[in-house]
Structure formats: C-alpha cells, structure tokens
Image (cartoon, rainbow, N blue to C red; front, side, top):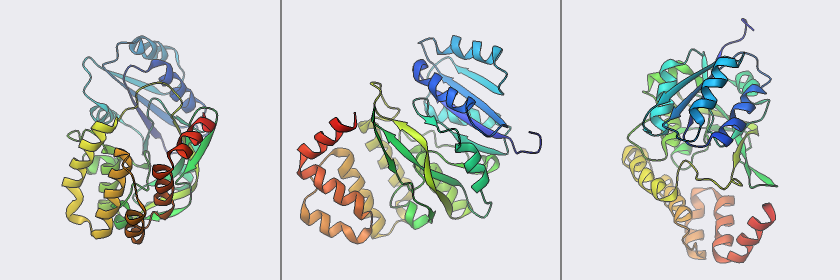
Length: 289
C-alpha cells in the first residue's frame, strides 16, 4: 500500500444519514487500497453526527470527520476537506450518490499530469433502471467546457491543484462544480474524460437534491458573470439552451434549428421531443422507475 499514492475522497453531508451510509459503503468497497475519506457534517440534525463519530472510532478505514455546528453549505464543507486532505490525489462524492468499486482505481490509472483532471461519465439512476450520461472518451478543452459541463459532477486531480485555484467558490449558490472544473482547465490545461460510467447519480430517492432549480438559476447567473467574458457566441447559445431545459420551457423547431450549429445535437433533439411531446417524457420516467 505504501507504494500507491494516497487518494483523498471528500463527502459533504447535511441531514441525509440513510443515504450517506450508502455513499460511504461505496468507498469501503473500492478496489484501490490507499484511500483517505473525509466527511464534513454540515450542521445535520438527523443522527448523522452520532453515526459518523461511531464510524470514525470503530472503523479500520482511514476516515476523518469534521462537524459544522451550523450549516454553511456544501462548498464550505468541501473546502474544509480540501484544507485537511493528505492525499496526493483528491476526488469527491455527493452524499446521495455512490462510486462503483472500480472508480478510484480507474481514475488513478488514467490520470496524466499533462491534463488538468481526469473524469468519467455517470449512471443516472431512476430507481429500477438507469441510463449512462457523458460516458464516451473525450479531451475537454476550455471552449468545450464553456458550453457545457463535460466533466460532469466529480473529477480526480492533484490535491495541490485544488488548493492552487482556491478551492470551491463559496459565493456561488449553485454551479460550483462546473465553475471549479472550468477554472482547473483554464489554469492547468485540457481535461481528460475516459470512457465509461463509474459514478452513480441517484434520482429515485424521495429526497431533496443538493441543488434545486431556483438555486441553480441564481448560481448560473453567478457563473455567467464570472466566465461570460471568455465565451463566444456558440458558448452563450449553449448556455441559453441549458437555461431553457432547467426552466422546462418549450423548445420549438425554429429554436432547435438555430441552436444546432453549437453542437450538443443529441441533447437538443432529445429535449425538443420531450418538450413538444410531453406524454413521451412522462412515459419514459414511468418506465425507468
């Protein structure tokens, strides 16, 4: 184990103890043996503190726990973990999601310092079924990333790089991961997405997600205020398309045709169909659950 680089995994959590246990279990099941787990309890009132304290005292796993008496948000929690991380590499996990057992081993094997970060696609899990998202190999350049978050919601990179750019922007109410990966690419160069989907995003659980649509819209405005000066017309057009999908506005044929030159063709056709043939979207959700 001493010959393998230490990987820090951070998990911010707030009032989701049942789901947190699943996330942590997925770290314990990793095939990569040299992991440091840092869990930051962001003011939970549901038994999370007792669970984590007991886990830290009894587990043979390398785990550190930090408690915030008052909830200050996921970014503050993540930055606490980054400051205390001992790993050569660092990666994150949301408390309602999970890693497949091969994930950390795969990311470490694929990491190359010429790239700012390495990532994979993810499985969007609806309950009984799932679909893979962004699971094809891709070199992600800054102009790509300014149109769409091709890195998805978690990456692996050198811990020193997280610190070099100041960690997550605590002023943003949403889009913090998108902002973080964009700044990493801007500072350290292209990112590498490897084929596959070793991260599971759960949507079948009847719980509040970390980011709700209202917060996302506000966070997106903040993101655009930071990065719009680097964007061209295609980037801005694709950001406008993302706003349409979050607001669940109708996406007509004229809008579709005008937007296709910006890429994301599959996503735009899918949303065109679902926004104009809503019964198909409802049927799809029913079948996936």
